Amino acid sequence: MDQQSLVSLILILLTFALYIGISIYNRAKVTSDFYVASRGIPPFWNGMAIGGDWMSAASFIGMAGTVMMLGYDGLAYIMGWTGGYLLLTFLLAPQLRKYGRFTVPEFIGDRFDSNPARLIAAIATIIISFTYIIGQLSGSGVVIGRLLNLPASSGVMIGVVVIAIYASLGGMKGVTWTQVAQYMILITAYIIPIVFMSLQITGNPLPWLTYGNFVTELGAIDQELGLSEYFAPFDESQRSQFLALLFTLMVGTAALPHVIVRFYTVTTMKAARWSGAWALLFIALLYLSAPAYAAFSRFVIMTQVVGQPIDELPGWTEAWINTGLLEIADTSEDGTLHWEDLFIHEDIVVMATPEIANLGMFVVGLVAAGAMAAALSTAGGLLITISSSFAHDIYYRLLRPNASDKKRLLAGRIAIVASTIAAGVIALDPPGVITQIIAWAFALAGGTFFPVLFLGVWWKRMTAQGAIAGMLGGLGVTLGYIFLSMAGVTLFGIQDTGAGVFGVAANLILVVVVSLLTPAPPQKLQDEAVDLRYPEQMTYKDGEVWINDGSDK
Image (tube, rainbow, N blue to C red; front, top):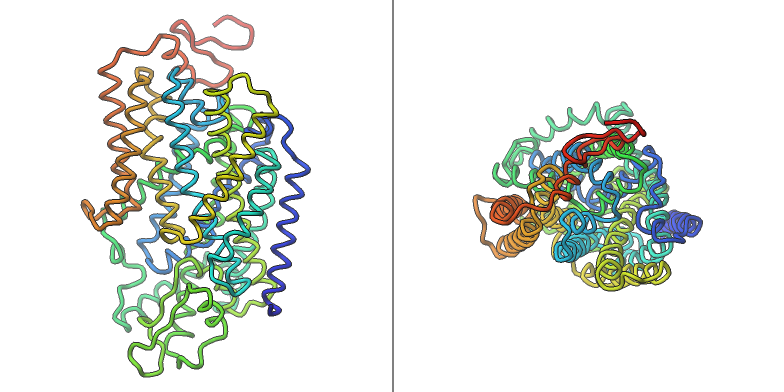
């Protein structure tokens, strides 16, 4: 192992030890610890934990690479993911927190007083979270594969072991505080390289103010090479795909079960709103930095790598070629590297940037540790969601309602280990790049849950039959379109990553039509739906709003 790999490995092992130590210190002792951290997390720290949960391998590793390769068209990821948090913070999170349940399936089952709806929601949650976690394990494989100069698939199983250990030990309580630590590490690791790159290239340490100049220069270079201009809109995708992807990511964000459950860990509706506000701030730090990463990395490659003799390329290229994520060919047979001869996998851009810019061993190692923090933080939240859907919503609420806390915790931990191993096996040969796989999870979440959750809060006439029809129809249409698109069949130029637009439409139509064709729900359920819209000190009953302070209405 070379010196660089040793430094990176030491930093990663130190962070692994920190995460496992935090999980042991905050070990879940009762089910409320395991599922919702006993609802005792302050909004500031919960917002940071949400940021850690959210900054997945797709955000840390994949997003900057996607923007670098697609230019303007890659911005749909940034705008969609950020816009979704506004929907969630204002339209769903406070209301779902007021309802006081542990999981999204539990909310759906109790809101409509329907065990079939609960079961369908639990199965859909497992499918969505399982899809998402495949992307996280693929990300850990990219990091560890480069670290040990192995194929990326060989690094996946190491991530499987670490994730299974700390998620099963700490539950939501341990995962929450682990995610706080992971956010601090990943945001530091993400920002330091572009600060140094900005200093190197411009003399200004604020990349957010300088990278715009390089976008213009990249446009000129693209014109010289006969490429589509880096900042030209809709050159790499159709307008319909851009809008469909943006919509899919937005509604998917607002409906992701593992994100929603983070708002259950605070004390009040007000705390849920403040958690969302803090989360947006912490998330913005990374999302505003991704375009800078993309611009700087593309500029350095275009000016310092492309056009060089192939036998005199920088040393960092050899290490990445060994991972299979960078390919170089001499198609013109002139011994010179052209842009067309260079295949750069989107998932290596952030990881390779410190090496491209010669930032030193410590920075390279720090980025590796940050990338692992991003993959692990989201994976932890996803595993808790899978665990709670199985152990709480299916095992406890449907199969064994008299099960003890000890048995419920054991069932949850078994579900974590089993799902991690299964996802790891699939991640050995992932079906797509990280951002693509995770876009599928967002499409499935939006298509299955968004109309049901939104109307479940804001339309009291919605029925259990409508919810069931919507979830089944939305899930089926979304999955069907993803498979059709992968086979080459598309509508309006919309690719598999924009499938959510069809799933949401089908779900919404089915919910409304079936609800109107079936008898109205009992008055009690309608009153509970209206009650969700009021602050916690107010209660809706008997057609009137009551103040919960001991006084009259």
